[in-house]
Amino acid sequence: MSSKLAGAVMERRNLATTEIDRLSTRDLLNVINQDDKCISAAITPYLDDITRLVDSAVATLSHGGRVVLVGAGASGRNAVIAANEYSPEEKSPLIGLIAGGALAMLHDMSDAAQDYNRGLLDLQAIGFSQKDMLVALTVGGKTPWLWGALRHAWSLGAARAVISRNPCSEATELADIVITPQTGAEVVSGYGEPKALMAQKMVLSMLTTGLAIRTGRVYSNMRVDIQHSTTRMAERQIAIVMEASGCTRARAKAALESCDHQCKTAILMLLTGMDAWRAHDLLEQNKGFVRMALQEAP
Image 1 (cartoon, rainbow, N blue to C red):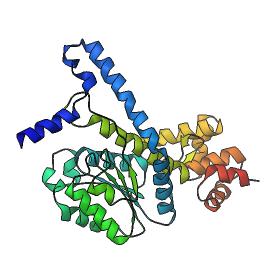
Image 2: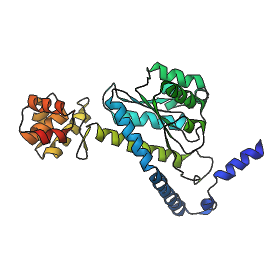
Image 3: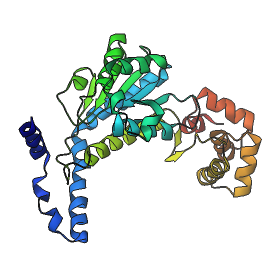
C-alpha cells in the first residue's frame, strides 16, 4: 500500500518545479505565475461543452426549474460561494450544496463526504425534481456523497453535468455534460489541488455570468438585478443607474424612489422618459430584459 501511495504522489509531481525550493522568493513566484497560465488554456478545449452547460441551465430556469451546484470539501465551498454571489433574492434559482451542510464551509466534514445515502437525502430535502438540473463539482470524481446525488438526479431523469479533473470516474459516467480541464500537476504536491479548483471557479464564473446575461439580469455589461436590501446595495443601485443612463446622482435617486427601487425600471424610465408604471409594464412584457424593452419603447 505504501508503494502505491508513493507512486500516486510521483505521478502528481510537477517536473518543471522540482528545484523550486532552491529559488529566491521572486523567482519561485514567477514559476507559480507561469504555471498558473495553463489553467485558462486547459479550459479552452471545453468551451463547446461549457456552452451546452450554460444553455441547458438557461433552459432549466426558463421552465421553472433550479440549477443545483453540489460538491464536497473545497469543491463544495466553490459551489456554495458561486450560488450565493449569483442572486440577490432569498429564493434563488441557483442553489449551492456542500456535503456536511453549513459547518463544512468552515470545518472538515470528510465523514459526510463518504456518505452515499446522504447525497441522495440532501437532494430530496430541497425537493429536487426532474425539472431541476444538477451540476456536480469534484476534482477526482470519487466522492460517495456526490455519487449519491448524481445517481438520484439520474434516476429522476434530470439534467446532469460534472466539472472535474478526472475524465474517467463514476461521477462523469453519470453526467450528460462532462467538463474535465486537464490542469496538470500542482506546483507543489501535497497542498491540495489549487489549479484544479481554480479551473472549477473559472467554469463556474462562465456559468453564472452566462446565466445572468441570458436571464435578463444584465444590461450592457452591468448587473441590473441589484435589490435595495442594504445601504451598500442602495449605493450600488444609484451608481449603476447613473452609469446606464448618464444622469446625475439626484435624478438616479429620484427615479429609483419613484419605482420602489427597481433598478431596471429606473434605467428604462430615464432612457425613455416613461413613467414608472409604463416602464415596469414594458419590462414585464419583455421578461425583464432592459435592452429588449428599449427596442419596443415608444
